[in-house]
Image (cartoon, rainbow, N blue to C red):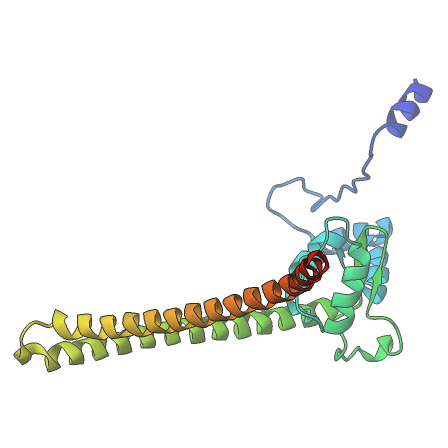
Amino acid sequence: QLTRLMKNLEHTKSRYIRCIKPNTLKKPLLMQHSGTVEQLRCAGVIAAVAITRSSFPSRLEHKACLERYQVIFRPEKPFRPRPKNFDVKEELQKVLGQALSDFVPQEQDEGKDSFVLGKTRVYFRAGVLEFLEGKRVDCFDLWANDIQRVARGFFVRKVTRAIKLAQILELYKDKGDVAIPIQSRWRIVMAQKEVKKRKYDKLHGFASMLEQKRSSSITRSPLRKVGKLNLSMWC
C-alpha cells in the first residue's frame, strides 16, 4: 500500500499544508496569538518568510509582469508590433532595465541587482515593486493629460466652427438667400481646381506630343535616306 501511495504521489502535484490551531479551547472566532505564533515558529514558517523578505520578497510571472509594466517602456525607435515568437525574457530585460535605471536601492541591497529573471518568474528586491507601481501610475497620468488635451482641442475647434458659421449666417441674413454666397464660394473653389487640372492636362498632352514627334523623326530619318539612295540608283 505504501508503494502504491508513493507512485500515486509521483504522478500528482502535491501541496504541503500546515495546519495551525488558533486556540486550545476549540472555539470559533477565537485567536490565541501566543500559541499561534509559537506554532508558526516551530513549523519554520516565520524563518521562511524572513529569508524570503531578506532577498526577493516580490515575484511575478514573465507574461504578467510584461503586460503590467510595458507601459513604462519608452523605445528609442518608433513603436512596432512585436512578432509572435518574441523572447519574453529579452523584452523584460529591456523594460525593467529602463524602468529601474533611476531606482535607489536600500542600504543592505546596494551593489546588488534590483531584479532577477528566473525560468518562469521575475524576482524583485524590497521596494522595487512599489517603485514600478508608482511609475506606472505616473504614466497613466501623462496619458490622461494627452487624452484630455486632444479632446479639449476637438471640442474647442467644433465650437469655433459653429460660432464662425453663425456669424456668416448673421452677416448674410439681411441680404437675401443664405445659400447664394455659400454656393458661389464653393463654385469658385471648384472652378479653380478645374482650371488647374486643365492646365496640367494641357501641358502633359503637349509634352507627350513633342515626345512622340521627336521619336517619330528619329525613326523616319534613316528611311528617308535609304529611299533617296534607292531612287538615285534606279535613275
